[in-house]
Length: 384
Ligand SMILES: *Cc1c(COP(=O)(O)O)cnc(C)c1O
Image 1: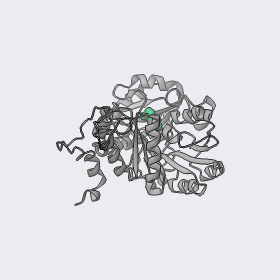
Image 2: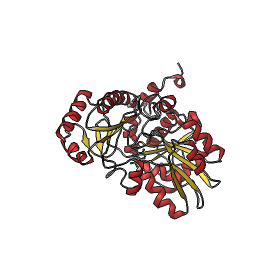
Image 3: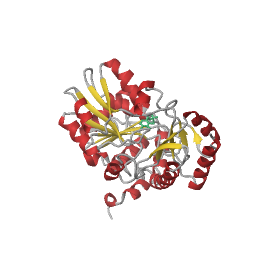
Image 4: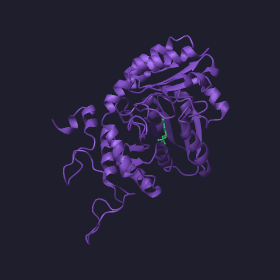
């Protein structure tokens, strides 16, 4: 069977295989070099490792193929990737973003790019009418997260793509929470898919990395030029770690999702919990839309305690689930978005969005679900 016809989980497991022409090494070698010897005929395929490096190249090729895009640039963090995307814009351009986008994305457009004359509007992208009225003739980019972070709000990929394109704007989807195994924005016509590869794709809480995948070769080339010009690339060793982590993505995500489904059900019926947000719960607003445009609910859960004062004490009581920012790795992590991941948003904005002091975000790992549930149960028992 030709490789192109392999199923996605087979292709993930084979990421980077066949990229060593010298020795046929099964895994992609780490090319820990800055530069490449050239002859009087000129350069070979590589000339300088900021521009490209064989390890990073193999990673980028695998991602392009898995995501179904035309080209990938690999960055030293998710924020470097989103910054490269923002560098497509010029003074006078306007961006529309999901209102509860990742705090760092909010800060980037709110502070850094505002200084360069790029303006941003934050809307509830669940509501296409709000998006339509926010788009102006100056809007060049609609940047969305679905499910959003931390409230797991669902936006319609198809409708929003049509709205952006009708205005002549690009649409970029931050697919960090879902990955190409669960949600495929290019199938809906998205122009860019961006990742914090730090999260599910690398998956082991051991490497910070980012990706921009472009739908067309022309856009991929523009991003590659920005990547080379601005220089925020991923190092060979980290590129190798990411390739290595990627191979088990399907297994990890399946397990994390199964665990999350069970934990969300447990949390949703717990008397000390006022609300549970998880696209896999039948009562989740937008849950049906999510399952039309994605193949699974993912493994991120948020929940709200009746008593916001109890969040700190509850987190102190957890032993298996680790209080730490970040998400998507094999170890379960729990955070307090109001004080941690989303503190960049003004307090009034956080409160209006529902990112209140009682809200907790749980990234479910691959541990045995009985241990995770017991850990939560005893910590919830310990608080008033
Ligand atoms: C973590 C995260 C980012 C930022 O990525 P870094 O790798 O931390 O720079 C962007 N978007 C989402 C949804 C994230 O979770």
